[in-house]
Image (cartoon, rainbow, N blue to C red; front, side):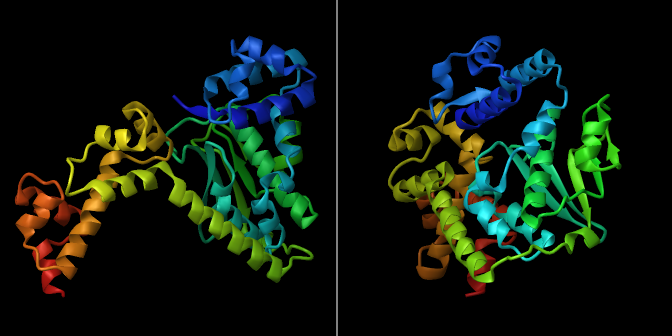
Amino acid sequence: MVKVSSVTFHYVLKALQANTKISIEEMLEVANLDKEIIQKSDYQINSRKLSEIFKYCMEKSNDFSLSLKIGSSITYHSLGILGYLMLNADSLKDMIEKFNYYQNLISGFVKFHLEISEEYYKLSIYINENPSIPVPSFHAEVHLSAILSILSQIVDKKIVPDKTYFSGERVSHLDEYKKIFGERIFFDTDENSIFFNHRTLLTKVDNSNPAMLEYFQMQANKILNDMKESSCYSKVKREILKNIGENEISIEFIAQKLGVGTRTLQYSLKQENKRFRDALLSVRMNLANHYINNTKMDFSSIAFYLGYSEPSSFFRAYKNYFDKTPTQNLKLK
């Protein structure tokens, strides 16, 4: 089940209200949701509820290009520091690369994926960074039209992709699509993507400022590093590191140490596309190398300290992780 943060949910509802004059209260009633839910900053809402509301608003307003209008109304200012970083990029190519690298600065369960080939730069959208999860049509329309709107604002010139793919069915209101995406629009594909040829990518950004770019990039990197440190996965790894060798490490034990329920911890890790066993393995293997390279501990002692019941289990895990045995690593010292 895909979920949306209450902050994102509320933002979309406000955009729908502005474009349709349908009140947020009416939308919440349609989806059978309490208003208190969208006022909780840390709450997650089933994305199907947003789909229900979108469908209701389109039908009541008789505006089936509503998602395109909402996407096109989004400005680069709404991206915060990411928007100002893009504003000072040198070219459209540079701007897209910066957006792709720093997009984690903005919240959202829909993420862009940049694929570079000899012919195109392709921006695709995934849910939770998973290409196998189907993307609802309105999500695709909002996000693809939004990124084109932002790029066009910054270069002060209408940016039209070389071609656009939608996974949804062909629409009747094609003229509205063509205004944004140009003539080459394909439906019923297996992806939601916009393609830029290399000639378009050369489009320059007027008044870009290298000094300001360096400043915003430095700030953005600091924020990303802080986000990594504060992620659930990082907290789990730190807690494992603090307790390994003295306590039996399990997800239940770590959840208790972090003051949360086991299911809550599992859910939080899942939101980051991480697993507890990966965190445990990462800590174990990094510690194993530390002991091998910096102490005279034998392999059996290392295995026991890291929580392996048998040295053979440790050897197998190490070989799978590093593609070489502890003995081979020791010989490299």
